[in-house]
Length: 146
Image 1 (cartoon, one colour):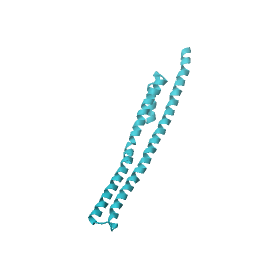
Image 2: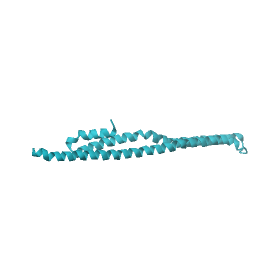
Image 3: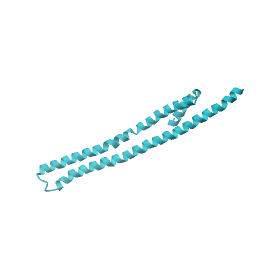
Image 4: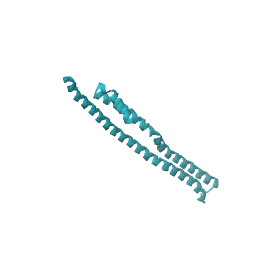
């Protein structure tokens, strides 16, 4: 029970209809299976997309807090009153990016890997169908002479 096994099973189920039908059936199953694999990467893409926004949200909240502190203090004469709020803003940005960047790298790695596996699977299935078609053609003249 593997993606390649499912594709080959589909091709073999249509072997009596010829190479074209085998190829079409295998292609349909392969396409569906590759889409399923790609969908498994979707949550990683969501994390990679949302994390920078959450980091930006934290930055905005931290900056609003910093300006509230200044407003309550009445002057900007003491920069240490801003330090805590600005620190929170920068930490949220850092955490957002620290999560998003690896998630984005992982997402693109997995998508590329799925693409490579799709090409390799296509090569194997094409070779199997070609081999079966060649055997079928080789058997036909022998069967006709008997």
